[in-house]
Amino acid sequence: MAPKTERIQFLRAVRQLRCIRSFYAAAILPWAGSAAWTGLAGPREAGKYAQAVLLLVVFTALLVTATLALRRLAVPATGRPRAPRCPAQAAEHSPSRSA
Image: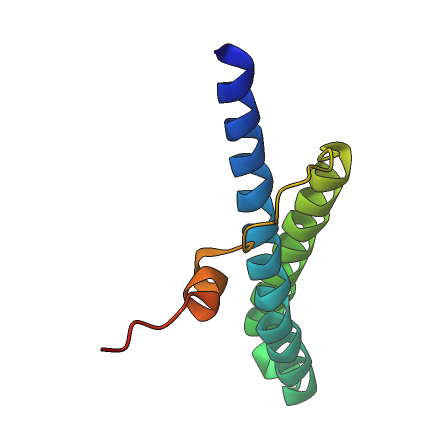
């Protein structure tokens, strides 16, 4: 019974890593824009620029870490169809219930 439970937990961890990786990628975009915007504002915005760059670096490091973790976790192929990666995608692809 343990190998089946471990497999389910493994697949759940992979799915969560994929979801959070897309979140980190989406979070990088506003912080890159914010860093560019405050960088062009001039020296009076140096504190805001440093904060934007710091958060950009943090989200980039998190994205790289999640990507490397996913590469290390090689998911063996199965004959079953794949489930959606994130719960939001599952809602988009679910059949509509119309009466």
